[in-house]
Image (cartoon, rainbow over all chains, first blue to last red):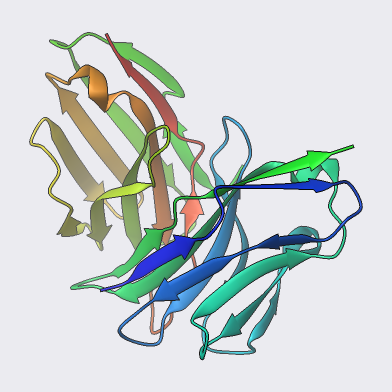
Amino acid sequence: AQSVTQLDSHVSVSEGTPVLLRCNYSSSYSPSLFWYVQHPNKGLQLLLKYTSAATLVKGINGFEAEFKKSETSFHLTKPSAHMSDAAEYFCVVSERGRGSYIPTFGRGTSLIVHP
Amino acid sequence: ETGVTQTPRHLVMGMTNKKSLKCEQHLGHNAMYWYKQSAKKPLELMFVYNFKEQTENNSVPSRFSPECPNSSHLFLHLHTLQPEDSALYLCASSQERDDNYGYTFGSGTRLTVV
């Protein structure tokens, strides 16, 4: 069985400072891992994905994530926060189920960016 | 636009009504998903279809009835809902081969049961 733990429900940063959103996962097999972002009243947008290629994954809008198997972590980072980054972020682990890949979502981390 | 379109965007229905949510994708994906997103709760997977066949039913009450007539369309038929069913219902699709390339989401239907 797979699971995802997002360690912080809220993260607050100042504009221009680094962002770190933490995610730990458990998975029976080699998982696929994703980060999604959701702006208010919008659907979810894919930021980046790890699917057994390079462990450091670059995504859109300057976000990166590093897959660390020994730590079962997939933390999301950005060197410098922008006001437009304020949103809800979801870490997702995906394994193949009976017929399809089944994504399991974390509870989400709300990123607050102060001017 | 993500390529996954959900209609309607907002829906208010009484507990005795029958309504349907629609999801349509023109991305050539073969798998489609329904999720429920409630306040202060994680996204809950409801149903998964792969090549029109239902492959997952996550213990969803029978008042929610999915239908997938083809790989591009997915419906969620609703009847005799409860106020706690009020939530954002999200549809997603993916192209599944040997690897998992990610999921494309629609903007959701905001459902309010009164």
